[in-house]
Image (cartoon, rainbow, N blue to C red; front, top):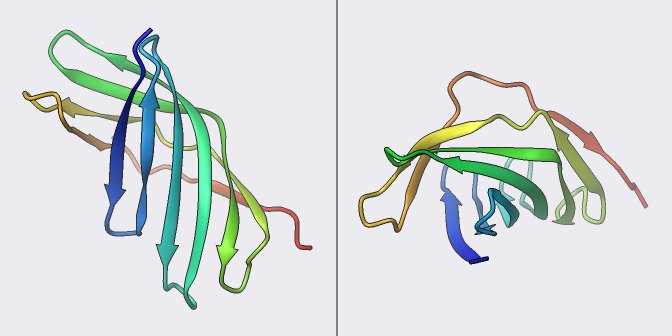
Length: 118
């Protein structure tokens, strides 16, 4: 089994991290989000995902279960959260196999639930 990691950056909402591909169609996602919406904040998050690569280089991926995380700074520091209904993403692998371009096909509601308030 070959494990490879790929950095991801989502500049519009300050998310960055690493997706690790296990080589068997599964992987792990770990990242950090930073922003200034309603005051400065940061959080760490993680999830498991599945993926499929077609022979034409198209790629699909889906978070399995929930994306979970913890607020590190800001008004909600110390609180945990989960996000359900993460959208399926699809796209294309670059010809040099060094990058992925992904998007969701349709708008999707994400249900975020705040946890521990201690």
